[in-house]
Image (tube, rainbow over all chains, first blue to last red):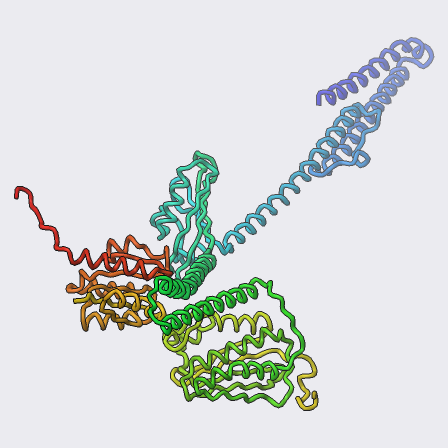
Length: 492
Length: 136
């Protein structure tokens, strides 16, 4: 602005200088022109010269003004928010008194444009980061809400501030009900409240854990391991997060394991008690006669056999469950295996006057079987049927082809099982109470049979029974290959 | 007059061994195959000593002890418990709260069982010490 004023003043001074110079020339030449042209023409010439000089000054000013106007209009049309290409920037002629200022203005525009471009890039990056942060927060919220483990978050004042869906379900809170308030009021589990409160009093980063039971109305009792962690710093941002892990299955497994160990212990100690007692009676000379001594020795032998059977069954089940048993499956005739099982059990059936019938299919029933193990399973079922059928009863062994499966069943007219017993009869060491009156057993025969059928041979076993009328154990196995459609006669 | 003992166990061989040992020692022995049968025999005629297993069908040994202690006339009946459950059963609780005089773990020694029974019978036969009061 200052330079523009200076330039205008300069042009006015230059115009005045020219007029003054014209006047001086006219006065100097006046005597000469007066001598030749007379005084009037001389004055006219001087005036014309002055007018000419005025005209030059006038048009020079107009040109400068016009160029400035064009420059300013071009400048006004430029978008100050866009980066400027120096080639597109309006220019003033080099002779223009404002040319230097225009160049500095151009440099300023370019610098500002560059700064703007950088700001725009930064802004765009920030917007992307903000969008990503929002998306991330939403994702974290969804993950948090969807966690299957209940999570409780409390602030430094011991007030519940955040819980996920699983935690809501646990404390019986509906989706639209707000969660909050003092922990003791919001959570109906004193042990968890105590854990979170105690953790809140500890240094940040401290972790404490407890196992607790949770009773939900109408649902089985659940067990949780609650782990609480002090978060934030020890000041205003402190808080506590408690995560509950459902350990009901682990607890059930521990309970089953303890029950199993207890049952094994009991089942082993019982025959051992018999052996020890009778050995001591013999050692103390309590048996006065040979018959008594023989009776005691028979008991010792039978209890030793019982212990042996128990250990064998236990080992077989354990091996199958651990997958370390050596299984040798080969194409076998199911009828041959069943025939042999019937031969093994028949003496025991005859001793009890039980009619053991073998109603085997005339078809060749091929199975991919470990012969010894499947034979053991069939013997177990037949022995059980004979054990729990009263003298004069009947046990029937049947085999049939069924689509792409083969099945055999052992039906008896024995004491039968209740619905509850039918569900539990394949559990280890489960013995039907009244069965104990009828026959000795380890409570492992049927569990072992189930493992052999289902785990080793990929089949199924089930039982149907009517209390007091009898039971039918049904075993279904996958048929093996094309030979299954051949008749026994053709095979031979 | 011989002392009477009631043996309760669902294992027939255990029952037979204990019965044999106690009969030879001059006891009047009765046997029961479970807790319920034992309870019926006790109601029919009170024995001088009850020896019972823990795990039995129908009514287990602990259930039998509870029934006995709930009956005032049987509150002083000496009881020995046999169990194959080992450490699962709190012997102290059985002694302190249920008046079970001895808990023997299976496998047990018939000789030791008889010895404990005779000790209990001898202790029961001794006259109770006179109660002295301050200043008397």
